Image 1 (cartoon, rainbow, N blue to C red):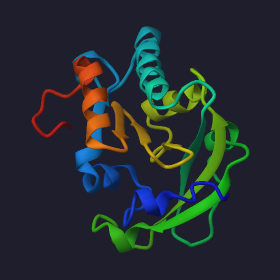
Image 2 (tube, rainbow, N blue to C red):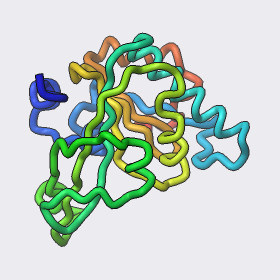
Image 3 (cartoon, one colour):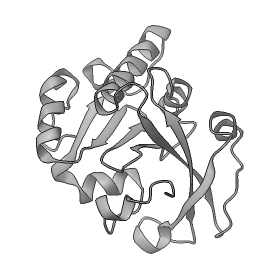
Image 4 (cartoon, rainbow, N blue to C red):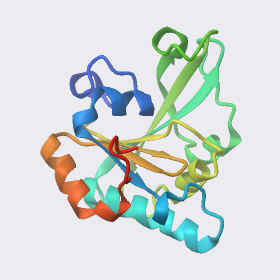
Amino acid sequence: MPILSEWDVHFPNCAPVGHHLRIVFAEHWVRFHSLPGAKRYPEQEAEYAEVLARHNCILGELAPLGTPVVLLTTEYSPSLLPPRASPELARIQPGGAAWRTVAMHEIDEDFHTPSYWHLFASLHQWHPGTFDRLVRLVADEVVFNVLIVSADCRWVLHPYDGGMDVITDSARARARLRARHAAWLSARPDGL
């Protein structure tokens, strides 16, 4: 079976773009902050350790040890040809295969000129620490639009600088996750 073959079944009419997923699937979405007090950027090793601990904790609840998960990383270009230009992503995802290209200028009004997001996919066996290097790069704003997806497309975790958005397979699963990690939630009514 091709990688992420169920994407369009579980996420119909939604490109694999983190901020679009949270809007389209709002009833399954929850955001967790990476640091206490909604601090956005880690400055010390202890804060990086907290960022990694929170990501590993949530991933561990979504994916039991050894579960296959798919890492999606994004490269950007003004053409349809998928580049592999980022040395950081090439090191973290050496076996990443071109999976899908999203014409952002066709689906997002914030893009006024041709802008293509090229997603690369690779399969991993989940265990704590699998994505630590990647999460640090995201926290430092080196890489963007990273998605970690269950192989059966039942959930998505989108790390961003400051936290992570999770799209669960049901409102019930979302409620359970929110309840277990209430201290990591935003105080804002909109959850951002």
